[in-house]
Image (cartoon, rainbow, N blue to C red):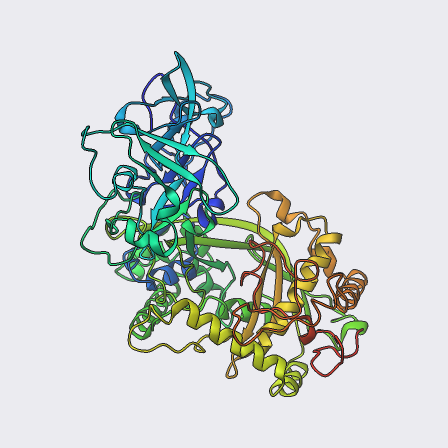
Length: 631
């Protein structure tokens, strides 16, 4: 970003932020300007010695199934090197995620001059090694002293994922150029106001003026040029390849970037031998060994990872390698569209009659006495997850429209690199959790009770409206809005999960934003009825035992009773309790609000949708409640 004597480092983010908030193609709002995270072609792992790729075969296979990722062979962490705190000028200061200033149009905070960085009007300063947040651009010739320059806060984006600078010169001169200068000087007067933008642009050379309000809304489509098909993170243009109309976004708008991610828990294979589980774990190495048992002896001596197979002979290991290879080839031939099924192996691991052997990434424990007597009508199984590892991968991103969590084809993602990448960014977190399984007969009886209810019919109708409003004009060849309806069972389990998360956060010592959920609701053919509440943070806080301890019998009984009883009332009642989705509305929740059920966006797997207290506890009557009689 700069040349000597200025430093290149302008900030830092956590690895998880590169998955959900500040990934490839996103705008990161720094104190004095904004930067755009560049594509994978510019990421350099060669200078970051000591890094290791992240191993998670199930997730890697799922990533490969998505369009544009067929050649992905590795999950890599962000390039990073230790030693920055000890020596801020050392080698570690030159390793990191590459960025570029964007938008590249800046405004002087004193004289309001508006210019692009390549005009040389503004200069970059970043002189303090230990304070990268003080990096800034200045207007050196403003009133005989340096004045702070800030990014002009408007950009253009389209639904195809393109991002571009706002065309200030084109806009001020109403589609033409300045008659008095080839490179006119502009000024931006931001007047504030409470009705949209009130920003006036003026050309110093010819005196032409125009308010940015004329670029907003429907009339803005007539006043703005067509999309240039620009991907600034890839440094590419495709002027003739985009037919979408650009929209004006304010810097920092939440819809400028939505990540498309996949995540998987590192669970051992169930129903398989210990040997098969280890072969799956090291498949990226074993898949390259050919020649059968004859080559394995040589490989054992030179590949440290193969020391885990000392208990098996070369013939046994060779046979298992061929078995796994054949299974993967069959899977590749029969794979269908959509996201891969990452939840089934997790469900099987949590519900196996005999818990898998504990390992460094996964360990379960059940109370020998089973479910506490006071909760035997509430849960069929309680499992303490003492150790778990979650791996997350960024596979693409979208703008304006968020990717659909069930169908990867509804909103076309933007690629992370110019060509077919052989790797994608990933991060891993370790933690602990509680797995709870609701009795299947209880859920089936409840589903029969609510099947014909008005409340469920309104939820189904709102889901149809929501999908039609978002996607019906983007899908060619027909559109089935109910294709991915999660079902009434999911609403009940999801609501129960949120009730428990809010109550657990008060007792276990973890911030509620440090907790995550996975709901295993399944389908009519493959019924599931589980909830996993777990920590998902990249440091040691997530493994201190505070969450697992909540599953101890004496604590769990009190926690569940408190969660269910407090759900019967909300300080927003009766407004909250009486809320139901309406036919013309497309919000996907009923009796739920920030007071009683909503949690942070990082905690909920569905963005606080599909929630309704009336489907879990009796509100106004016991007919719709999963638990008409509270424990």
